[in-house]
Image 1 (cartoon, each protein chain N blue to C red):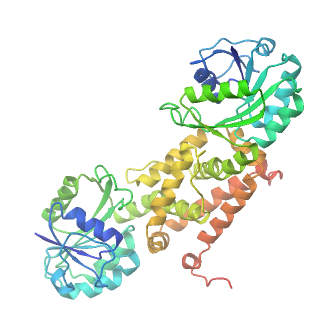
Image 2: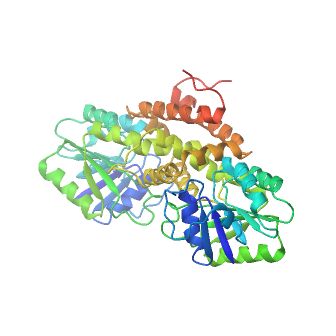
Length: 247
Length: 247
C-alpha cells in the first residue's frame, strides 16, 4: 500500500517519518523545497494522487483549497485522511469536495514534534470515521495502535468541544505567557518549570496553528470567554483590589 | 541544638518533619489542635521561645502579630528564620520587632508538600542573610544543602522580583485555570496535562498564600499588569477578532 503525505511542514515531515516505519510513504509539498527534512521520496501532486491513501498535513485554513485542488486527480476508492487539530469544519469541507467514491477518515494526532521528542508511545490520536469501508477503518485503527498510539474514537463535535477546553486553552495560555517574555530562573518552582515547557511547546508551533485552533473550532470562543471571565474573577477579586465586592 | 517551628499548618508540618531528619525539633501552633500531623513534640509558646533557632511557618499576613508576640519571650542570641514566600516586607517587620541581640535569616523554600512529594533533592531554597553571625549563617547554609536542597543566596529585593515573575505568575495561572473548572480528559495533550498539574499544585495551597503572594510582594502588581497586557494582545489580536488593527 502506497501512502501519500500532502504538506511537509513541521508537522507533516514529522508525520511522514512516523508513518514510514510501517508504510511506503511519498511526500508532496506545494513549495518545492520543503523547510523540514523527511527521509521519504518527494513526488509531484499527480503522483501523490495515485497513492492508495493520502494524508493531509496542511494548515486548517488551507484545507478547502488543498482538497479542491486534489479531488479531481484522485482515483475512485482512494482514502483521504486529514490530521487537522479541529475536526467539524475541515471534515465538512473535505466531504463537500470529495465524491462519494472516495473514503474519508478524520484524525487528530494530539502531539507534535516537540511533545513526541521522547517517542509517541501512549500519546493520543483521535479517530473520526466520516465514510470509509469497515475494512479501511479497522486497518487504520489497528495501524495507529501498532505505532504505539492510544486511539480514541470520537465524533467531530465531541472532539472539537473536548479539544477546545484541553488543547485550545493550553495554546491560549502558552501564547499569552509567551507574550510576557518569561525567563528561566534558578529559583523556579516545579510548577513554573511546567509553565515554561508549555510556552516552549506551544510557541514552537506555527502562529497559524494557534489562529486556526481559535477561529476554526466552534467551541473555542466559549473557552476564551470562560478564560476571560475567570481572569476577571481572580484579578478583580475584592481581596486583591481592596475594593468592596460588587453587590 | 533545639529547633522550634512556629506554625504547624500544611507547610509548617511538612517543614518540621523535614528538619527533624537533622535536628531536635519542637512545634508550636496557635490553635492547640494542629490540622496536620508531624512526628515532633508539641510545646507551648514559652518553651518554643527557649529553642536556639525558631522557624516561622505562618502566613505572610500573620508575621507581624506572631513576631511581636514572640519577641519578648526569646533569649538573646536566638536565631529567627522565616519561611515566607515573599521576603522584603516580612523581613522588615521581623527586623522592627526583634532587638539587635537576636539573629535573623530569611529563607524561601521554593516547594511544598505537593511539589516535594517525590523528595526534596535538588529543590531550590532561597537564603537571605539579614543579620546573623558568620557561624550561624554558614551552619544553616550547610544544613539546608545537607538536606539535599539547592541553596541560592539572594537579597530580599532580588528574591521578590524573581519570585513575582516565576512563582507569582504560576499561582496566578493556576488559580485562574482553577476557576474554569477544567477537567482531565482522555484526549489531553502533554501540555494540557502540565497545566492540570499546575492547577492542582497551586489550588491545593491555602487561598491566603495566593493573596499574600499577590499583595505582599512589591513586584507582583507589575507581573499582573504584564499578564493583563499580554492577555489583551493575544485575545484582542486582529487576526482573532477580525477587527482591523488599531493604528
